[in-house]
Length: 452
Image 1 (cartoon, rainbow, N blue to C red):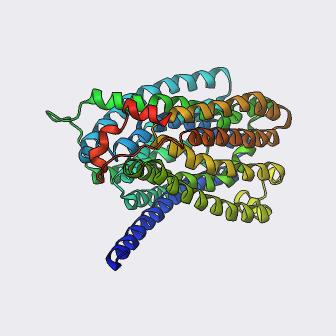
Image 2 (cartoon, rainbow, N blue to C red):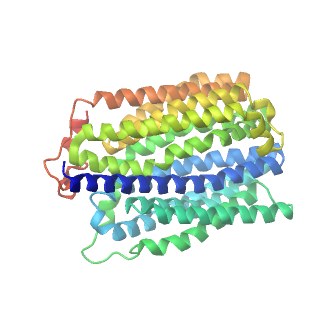
Image 3 (tube, helix red, strand yellow):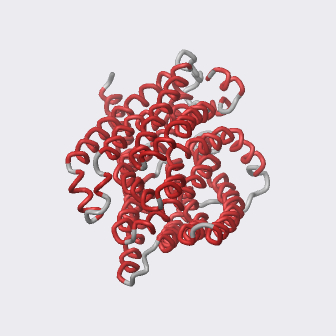
């Protein structure tokens, strides 16, 4: 290898390390904003009020997961391949489509929240009502941030996340001073921050709001997304059950305070979860390109490197948190929720091992355009949750829920690894050095058959 080639390789490595660092920083700031929101709520409001927020947020996670499956995941794949040269036009179609879907969905959630407020729980109904109004603006920010990953410009996404963090903390502090902090106001704060950041970032993407003559057809984009997302939507629904069903059931069995207890534990392990998510939007387009250029073997090397990074980071984080868990509960929650700082926390830290495998292998399956494999993995995990996890939670409360989370995580990781291994011997190689020229391979029947 010549010195010029070595220099070029070093520059490429430095380039991707920089992009990865920016992606991690972006997710750190964005997740940090929600982490502080949750911690301050848990610290400053009553346990029952925080339990109402946890319940409403679990419903938002379901809506957000479906949104990610329909809009964001396909955008990360198609934006890096077939619509790469017409991304502004493509993004405009997605933003218009999101508006026409999320607004009616929010109206339906408003109706459901009003019914819950009238016939069940007033505090939970109010929190769900605020969540319904906040959803469209929050989901808009999700698309805008991820669009910068398609363009391989995570620096702009990071700047938006920093602004979002500053806005949230500032408004939360003011609300605390005037005694206005609640589950309802927390969703209002998230909505205001999302609208402000989106208004700053969106002009940088230059979306084309009006379709031009001879341009992309809305119907073609919608069909492409549906062909990709039909399995991802099902996977999102199935994947929501193991992680969130406990927030709905624990209040019925033990009260809103128990849902708050589970949420404060998840606040502690979520930094690693968000770290695993941070490289996902950057890893997926990279795996798509590697697949088109070098097939599964090139994908495997990238995935193994990512998994090693995840596991090392996870080990350092888990060891530190377990060692200083008493101090963490004291600093973050003012000594509240100490009863959950032993067994349940240890189980959730162990479940992060499975989360690392899921984060990498699920991304690999999406790059192979096999979201159906992810769906069946989440179905298996959901079955374990319903058959084993919920009975444990009904008997043991948060401890049983943590046991169920560990079991379901191991099941989903095992199934995903099996599906990916099953495709290991079937190479998908494009006889071209230009991945753009190989774009028609995406979503072809042959490609799906080879993945089998």
